[in-house]
Image (tube, rainbow, N blue to C red):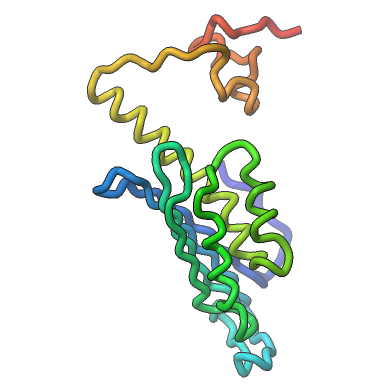
Length: 188
């Protein structure tokens, strides 16, 4: 169901964030992200001689190569378009992500390495949905392979990591009652 009909309006800005996950032939994963910002009007800009309506103000890419533990093995960051001529110069700093694991503390680690003047706001923002894409790529692929091979779900100690992570996985939800009955709790 789409959103309700809006009040009369005109489009001013479009931000597109695209994230994709790939399984490489060497067994690792590539997680690619792209962010673009486009205005519907000409933007004065002394560094680019003006930015015409429809031309990206920002057009930036990141590729993270990760292993199955979601540890970053390689990073490529590119700024094809930015508002200032020095914007592409900061992409080299994204090499600081090598060796960091996508998982608990991810945001803190990224901001420690690339926060403020040490990074680019837009490229750093792109890393948040890329982390989710990495999880979706790895765990979706793992589940698919298990289903295709007929293997059982791996045994775990304690509650599933997704328990209480959202409304559907809340310990009193019908979803939890069906898929993890041992962790289900009757609503209060």
